[in-house]
Image 1 (cartoon, rainbow, N blue to C red):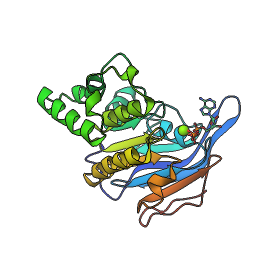
Image 2: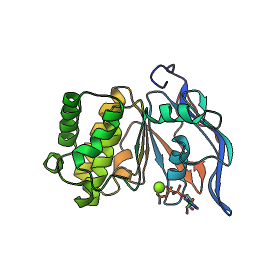
Image 3: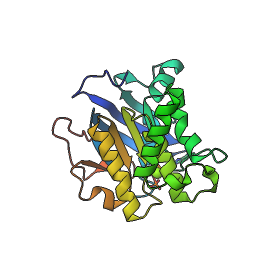
Image 4: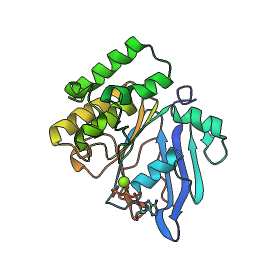
Length: 239
Ligand SMILES: Nc1ncnc2c1ncn2[C@@H]1O[C@H](COP(=O)(O)OP(=O)(O)OP(=O)(O)O)[C@@H](O)[C@H]1O
Ligand SMILES: [Mg+2]
């Protein structure tokens, strides 16, 4: 679905989207944003700006109150559950609260998406070793995820999202609990994945990871975009 989607078209197209949580909390307000296939975009903004809400709508955890979101050309409000599940298998998500399975080991947590994709046990082992090494947590491979520090759990969540090198990755504050050195390893991994073809959206208020980056930065303020750096082919539409 996503892999065969044409280049140069918005892979994620957010069109005039508003999200109101009951009773009247406006989290995202009339926001439009087009993200091209192969882009790496930083979604920035203060706490409460609406970053998580926007990511949740892209991966169908929340529904827009108004407006439209298309992923790989599919209108998310119109596709059926089977298609949503198929689409979700191609999206790696790093949740802000990690969502690691506490009773499963680090290895088992990261293996989940690869097992779903019918990867061979050998391939799974090799990929997990590679990911653990790049995130510097090889020594925790067989420990239950619930016994890890928050920074370690965060890296397990990142490795799990990256395991299949999915065509779309949504990462919510992926360096929120990490020191600068480990954050730089995380960004190395994301850059590698992006070079290999993954489209990546990173929600963050960690200036150190985006300040010097050449990639596009989009800033949300109280649910609205402001001070954005527009993209050459896919201008950000403020409406
Ligand atoms: N489930 C919910 N029910 C009601 N209000 C919510 C819910 N989730 C988020 N909000 C509100 O929506 C607004 C945007 O929240 P959101 O979590 O998207 O912001 P954020 O930019 O991710 O913040 P942070 O940087 O702290 O993670 C906030 O005012 C928040 O209180
Ligand atoms: Mg958030």
